[in-house]
Image 1 (cartoon, one colour):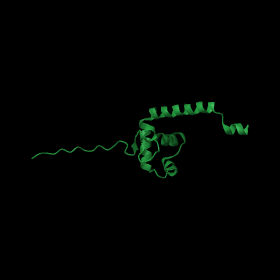
Image 2 (cartoon, helix red, strand yellow):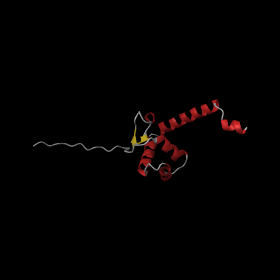
Image 3 (tube, rainbow, N blue to C red):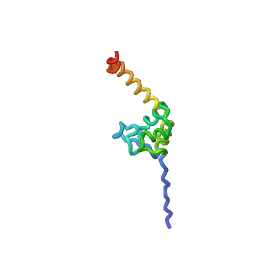
Image 4 (cartoon, rainbow, N blue to C red):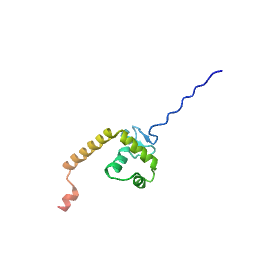
Length: 107
């Protein structure tokens, strides 16, 4: 008689998050979408939207996936916040080099 061992499948810590180098440059996204974790983090942490408001803004998401994205963000906050700061600096440099057409038109 042989005893067959079965290995329990360990659930993913973030079942709604995936990383694929072919999608959004390998940035963590909500699986099945192109919505990046960083976008959810900005909407929640910087813009002050609630998870329910984020779902309202992106009706193809569900509350579980938004909460999972926020969980992923808070577990990786230092590195994600660093990316946000770097991208803000890039935008700032571009804005300094390229004058606003609207500001120019207004005077």
